[in-house]
Length: 297
Image 1 (spheres, rainbow, N blue to C red):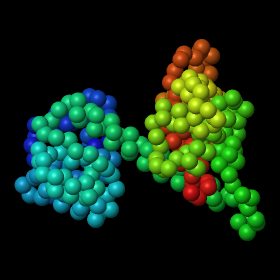
Image 2: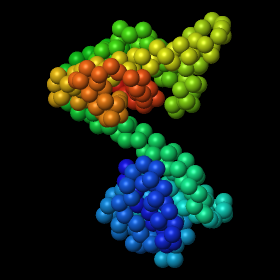
Image 3: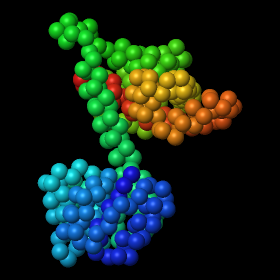
Image 4: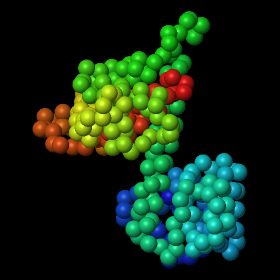
């Protein structure tokens, strides 16, 4: 990810840049000492995330954000300030900031805020990628005038799992149940923490509560094995044909690039796979968003 820091205090700019780059969040591509200069450099560099001071002598952060949005900038904003005035804080959030960082700069606080805004940025990017991919796929759909069969969550999810080569995995049933719960019974319409999700799906499928914690942990393991199998299948396809449509579409959408490359290396060099890690939450979030899009929910 790329960052821009707009703050009239050079020490604060330097500290924030050190934290962002040394903690591995990304690269600071531009800095500015005021709102007017900040507007110019942000529109030129188009960073993913802007850290901007609330109070600056030439133009404050709220005015600068409003101007940038008016010019079409679509990145995310984090406000830096010592101000505790609730009215100004509320105005800043209404303008479109994601989080606040309080001065004086605290390394731990900045890392925590950067982690949150980075996750939100990545999720928005995944959703955007899904929408773009679906838009491309629509051009290859058969005659739209033909009658369409009723689409269910189970049908949509099973088709995707079939493409990923895991429809026969035992965890695929858990994944289908999870997507059905998210689409039909999830009243909050957001993506809950995985532990809550496992327990909610486990509980909803039982007549009595039983040992929900035990069963949800078993579900977690089954799903993790299925997601790992999907990663292995896609890596195998990529080694055979890097331009395969399934690999091009699903690999970057459902998995982190470094995980795909590591799995391809293990297969290619016949390395015994270690425990490794797969981003199960990303996989399920993307599957959820793709299911909603395919069902036009």
